[in-house]
Image (cartoon, rainbow, N blue to C red; front, side, top):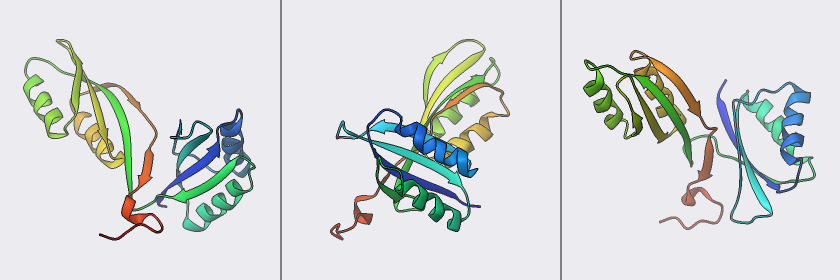
Length: 167
């Protein structure tokens, strides 16, 4: 199954997230990632959902979401026509013999060292979900002590918006 990214614009009212997540619970759908934030308009929030379902099921999810009173619109941001990002904070084990190699790899991923001690490094990485997964896989060999990872956020590229000028 493919991962689908849905951007759901909703009225910024109390209980909206509960209604959206409740729909998933009632229907037995799983949410891989969920991120919520207010938009440029304080009366509107955007909920970014990542789900692993067949395309037909994603269409069904969209239809069900559109029935909710506070849902304003839904945009499918799956694929290459959108920018997707996550943030990860990762604590990696280090020692004197591997510290230089760890720092070099951190630089390769264009991540940032937030804090460092003799035995560990805390790293911040802002990247695509795939790149963050790759980062975690590479550093697993050194020993990852802890990971905190946000949900995916996404926006369409300007050229993919309806009515956008093609340059």
